Image (cartoon, rainbow, N blue to C red; front, side):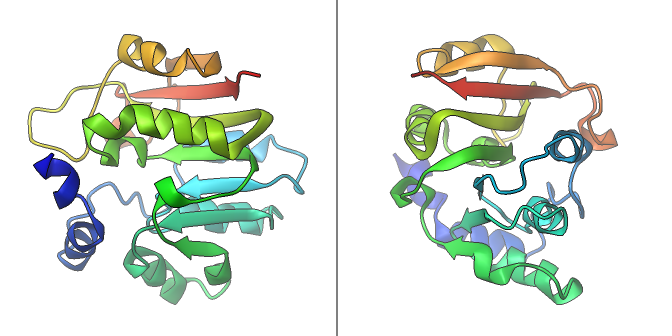
Length: 198
């Protein structure tokens, strides 16, 4: 479809260059920060897909999760953050296509990657997450609990839509309204903890 072709590396680079990445929260968002703060096993392998500006990856490394990596189609946003923070783990960012990525992870963190994908890629997203996670691995993060009037991205959805999408591959441990969203996203996010089915 035409939309899939548009949402490529050039598209995202143009958005970053034109300062159109309105979802850049400038730091890690509260739901993910709270989740990371209660993790104790710093040796676990963690993936942040669509890492963008890399605030989650930077936070993970500062907390001692040095086996965490990010992946993105473009380095532009990440390089902006690296200029501001000398300890940004640049060598832990893979520039490439998430859907071509290979690896095995204990945990994958979702923060505005799912909503950036064309709607027709959602089932591919779920299958790829399943493939990349180790047995009992988890996909954790936030999804928009809202539909948007303007053309995406971001693309929204609701709990019932997501439940039908993920349940064939994951046990839905948590899929509830986020109580600690950042102000611009209050009452518009679902916090998810999805465990890979074996």
